Length: 155
Image (cartoon, rainbow, N blue to C red; front, side, top):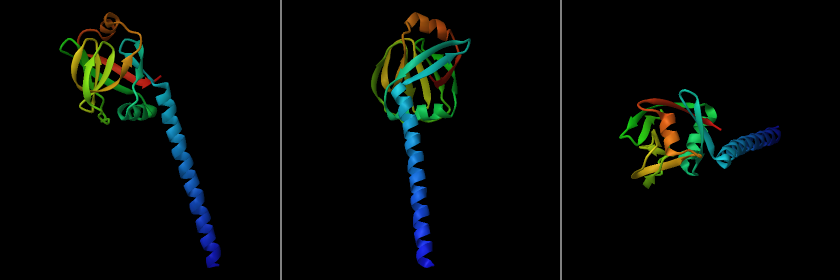
């Protein structure tokens, strides 16, 4: 009887391990698929939408994981006539290094602020990605003057 119980217990533990490994692999495959796609959508209040191509780092991987659970809406303020900045409401891993931004760059600042540049700047930032195929003038027009709300979603 003890031998049968031991064999049954080992079988159940093995089955549990297989299920857990399968779920882990499915989760990794989902995240890998989103990172292979490497794009997110930014929808600016008023309906203007852009796609952005992400760089591959732990910050963007974490961002994609959050976006897989739902959209993130960020209220952004204009700063220094060069960028829009707002809190993501979450913290992401930082991969800061000296960076010179260009119009359309998407940056993580201090691990929790999303920054969209429409001009240039140099500082220690974490690069997240770049808005695809947008001119500085089109970006400034879409972001408008003053505060703006931007929603991030998986593309």
